[in-house]
Structures are given as C-alpha cells and as structure tokens.
Image (cartoon, rainbow over all chains, first blue to last red):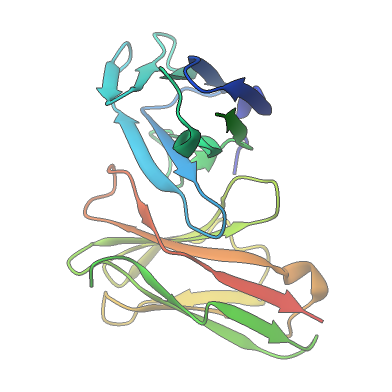
Length: 111
Length: 113
C-alpha cells in the first residue's frame, strides 16, 4: 500500500499549547481518517472525513479534508498530558478497500 | 463482543513453524481487515473481507500468508513456514460498512526466533 507523508515526525510541547500536524498524499483520497495509538494498544479512531473541504471537530480536536483531496490536517487545542501518543493519518481512494496509513506523529506533552 | 478481540496476544514461534492468528470482530460488523504494523510504522494493509468473501488480498506479502473468514464472523490469518522477517504486530480491524472508520483490536505480537 501507499505510505502517506505525515509531519512532523514528533512534537514535544507544554501543556496548554495548540498542536498542528498534517498528512499529504500523491493520490486523491475520498476518505481521510485520524487515529491515536497509545502504547500497547491498537489505533483508536478520532475523526473521519468524507468530503473535500470538510472541517470536523471532536472536542478539542479539529480535522480538515483538504480541497485538493490530497491532504488533511489535525489540530489539537489546549493540549493536556493525556494527549500523549502517536497520531496516524489514514486515507482511502475510490479504487481500493485498504486504508493507507502515515508513519505517525509522536506527541509528548509536559505538564 | 464489545470490541475486536484477537488471540493470542503474544506468540513466539520457531522459524519454519506455522502459526494461526485469530480475530473475533465486533458483532454485526460486515467488513474485516488484517493489518501488520512494524515498530515505528503505521499499519500496513494485508487483506479485506466483506462477510465471508475475501475481496482484497493484495497486501499479503507472499503465498505463505493466507486468511479465511468462513462464516462471515471470526477470521484466521495463517502464516506457513514462518521466517524472522514475519515478526511484527498483526492487527485485525472491523467496521459496519466499507467506508466507515475501523475499530482495531489490540493485536497479536508475533516473534519468530
């Protein structure tokens, strides 16, 4: 499957700061998803996006489906220590069943 | 069940042995997926089932890997003649429909020695 370009690779921030991460693809996707993975656990779905330009929020998290359909962004506002984990973007094209995942953004939050 | 259940949680096997990994998806979920995740990487697609039909196996690395879901519920991923490079976390996921986000299980950590 195709690997997405996810950045940054890691972030080390203080509690209360806002966080932004993004994901780009050379292919057009019709679905973008954002997952969070805690140590020893499977990825957990945070936000799903199904339409170009769509902006969706889930609490302090906001994600956008890029207009070009080749990118997506995730923002976390007012970070807290429990936001620590690895965040993965994932996208699906019209031509297949597979979700293609990025390599993840590792987020560390200090109190 | 309440979540996607995978067993065993850990499996250590000798090179050349066959292993079978089990996935019990969320009750009623039509779509079932197998992924493999290496350390420091995102999950990598292996195969997809719609009910009992294996509709995409393009991600299976070679013919030592196979999967089945005979009754459209529990699925088994089998790796024959395991090799050290097969060592990874194998994750199963299910969803109610194809275009929904998945729910992942906790995975099976396979170590081939």
